[in-house]
Image (cartoon, rainbow, N blue to C red; front, side, top):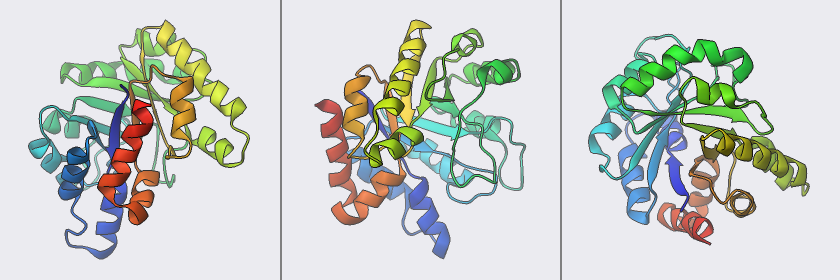
Length: 248
């Protein structure tokens, strides 16, 4: 079954907007786990806009051993203030998976994947460093990416398909071309021996079609839509709704 990893960034956004510790990131993680999710995702950024390094350390100490901890981030972003850099965070937290994403402070959210033809050689030593920590390495790529041999060659074990354009097309009632691009990239990744994750703007409305088209998805990482839906339905019921979609 495809693993559901819940991204807790939006919980931290709400907490940081007021200060203090509410809503509690750790309590939110426990609630999602008790509802049945198999993983917790965080994406700390150098500007500390949501998940902070202290959240990463606390989650690393408290997550059950059978729950996958996935840390996303830009491996090229240098340390800044309390942010020690992605490699240092992973050295301390030892997540099961690290997802490398080419984002920066100017982006409201991740909005594109790596150009593997251009970035592979620069990524290689970092992929090797993360692997030495025992982390599975996943690379964020655009749907429609055809040349995935570089990802396998530098030692990545998975890709994560950026599904933002698919979600937008689905909302517009014209998902076919965007979905086909996701499927094509997933097929090419599988041919290279790479596992396939997916994430960004996935929701209860659009996840089922993606999962039916790519039934071998290893993992989906869902945060913004899940937390928005949880405002109306409750966090635990929302997590269970996603699990029903993935088990169908």
